Amino acid sequence: MLKRYNCPTPFHEVRTRFLGSIASPVLNASPMETVKGLWGGELPAFDSIDAVNELLHVLVAGLWNRLTEHQSSRHPFRLLRFEVEQTRDGLKHLALVRRQELDGFVEGLFGSQDQIDLPVRAHQALGVLSEARAMLAGAVDLLEDPTKSAEPGDIKALLQNIQQLTIIAEKEMNKATISCQRARGQALETMLGSKPTLH
Image 1 (cartoon, rainbow, N blue to C red):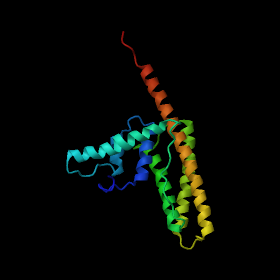
Image 2 (image 1 turned 90 degrees about the vertical axis):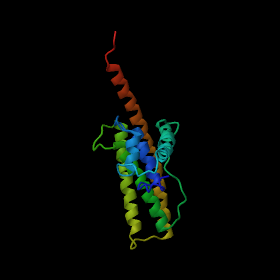
Image 3 (image 1 turned 135 degrees about the vertical axis):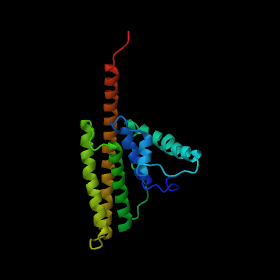
Image 4 (image 1 turned 45 degrees about the vertical axis):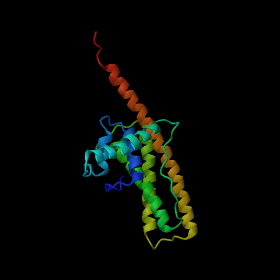
């Protein structure tokens, strides 16, 4: 579906951007705005209203709604798993995918805001994700440099490092998601509790 409409955002990043939007403390964040953001802010051209409904059904009723389940510690979110060739190019692709996944999550979390008020645990998690993202970006740069060694031993060690970063990133994304969800619930309770009641 994303390919059919030439979506510039790859599927692995769509997943994490949706997750970030679902967790976002920005109360006016909406699935529709997030979907538009995948194409840079405007939906692509459609042949019919049925085509629009089909896209929204797949992305919102399908993917978005499934991802809302990860707001519970019983259903932790996992980054996309796929076969990785133990070559320079294979590893570069993995590092790039992981970096884009982290970018997507942060972009979803912030939405159109430059700054947001995050709970302490989510703020700490974002700090760890920022470090992981820097390491992945460094790995991409390293693998793009043909002057740097890419012997089988180097590739294997780097693959293990990226696998460790994957586990760390998942843990921190889940922490941020659950922390934001709790904070949002408390904020809504406070808002509802402060409304005057009619007698």
